Length: 565
Ligand code: NOJ
Image (cartoon, rainbow, N blue to C red; front, top):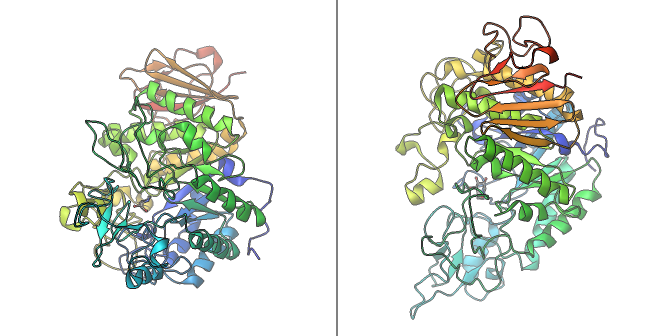
């Protein structure tokens, strides 16, 4: 039934501490040279992921799709778009990953279909009042002519969340007009997705990432959103810039996080549990509070929920401390494992968020080191191990539907294909010549995998060391974390025998006692040495318990310390 390799222990709950690497399928590796990444490209690069030291990969949607939102507009949930390969290529990828001990999570997009899905085509053809329309949210418009949208909701991608069709009815799309929202109150919808889950579980996937998991149900009467005077009616943001903690009051969100959605996940949990091999699901749920996030991971619902809290936290010890504390306490209430995310395909890459350039990269490495020490799983985004920054994509090359609807730069800048080798485009991305689907910048050669491999100062080798050390040290350090902020800028996280310190200030700080296991940058008392070689004299791991206070942690740097006892 499952096609799973023998290495999987059904009781291991591998996902609780996994490092999962997000593969943005269009931009990871191009097997056939057409300038767009694909499944054979990923399969060929699986050894790279194993050697990097991750446990799993999450692959963004590769199903048949007109690609208006780059696969998040699915026309057929049980196929593979010819752009990316075919079902045999998906099977090869699964088999290849399992052989190397890597798990595979695929993306499930249940909030909306593509406007090219057979159901939507049938709904348009069948007309108002038809059973075919009832699977989506078609409504009459407001105003005497019905030419005003049925309510005041805005699309996440900008503009009204409603589009009018030729016969005068409107349909809801919380994202692009090519992504009509399904009506989850219709029984066909739940049945379709149960079949889709089983289809991919039967092929051997280890889990699902649930797109817009908080969105499936809308308030039944589709009433207007109540907005404050200084707010625009909106449907929350896929890449909200407001942290949960910054909000003094919760927004009225009749389109998100409705209680009925949890019934869906209870049903899916039964399906997942029916299969052997510890299958799991992780929710993409942009909820307003840690507590509401925790509701998605109650023991009979999904296994994990992305924790986007860190994505929106500024570079500050206090903000990081709050993220860690709030997350761990919310997850402890439901006995779920935490997740941590610093970058993904919807947000500005974290070196750029932290100011860009050398300082941005130093901060990004420090934040990564803090994240990797924490209990729970870490979700990495392709290219962060290379220290890639957000690329300033020229307007004529931007493809993000949110750019097309709002004129804001959008998300293309974090989706530029990965540089693997060489000193000009496509930098080993594929066998073709010239630029891939989003042009790569000039001068990206030193960022490539080949250029960084073997250079111990590189971000890639830093990630490799950190991930290896996480396996041997962090995953056995227990679930309790003591969080402290010392004199405003020094974040100290203590987990079992492991202490993590992050200096978010502008002056060097004394390190607490302990053996330095790894640091995100060379430590100043041995600037020429390798900061990561544990316990070797003269290699940047100065001192042990007796020398506390003589070692310094520079600004924008983090270190892991082993308890001196
Ligand atoms: C979240 C996905 O991560 C994003 O890329 C997509 O545009 C929206 N959901 C809509 O499916």
